[in-house]
Image (cartoon, rainbow, N blue to C red; front, side, top):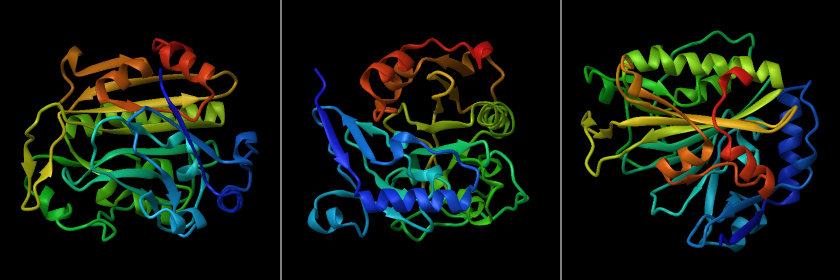
Length: 304
């Protein structure tokens, strides 16, 4: 039986999140579950104790894993549904950017996962895409740089896409940090991966908001690496998506890090199946009955 561990982010921080969210998205609708921000994580051996840097809890709990906050706190990155946990021993540094929340791994020099909430208001915007790939000084050296990718044969694959952040210049800039990037096959990056990014923007406009978590999968104990900093190349990628209105539903997929020409290069899965493959626990802040129901749903794209 799973043991529930509940971590409460201070109410003052919750109010700040709501204020900043409304500044960045004036038409954003109210969310009843945001008046008191409670994050539930599951698992007897889960070690994640999430606090926001600078909060009273952070000052009083030196052993807590802290979320490094950079820039404005917005709903895009701060919603408790985005927090993803695991029972596995995992190297991670939790970092919140304006456009996403990420768990960064200093061993692979890639994110473990990246989560964000894409709203109808943020699904489009006035900011044109610009390329601003940059190393991130909030993570320790060695860290990924542009030179690691040059001549490697792999593209710089966004987890949280630039196209989801046309609503704000800083939010788009954050997506080009290498803490949000993985080595990705060019055909996958420009094909299936890009296609699902566009689908998510379509669903955000249709349903009002969509919660997305994605990241690399490393099946092998030893990975191919690129560049002098030895950035690990994933064998595959996962993506899970959740909408809550008009009724909760979710699905995910696993895409091999290949050119995507074979039928076996892409698998549509229930959230439960993606959890078994990756070892992660997604959307655990949902009430148990809703979480169990949506995570068991078999993918039916025609219903989306």
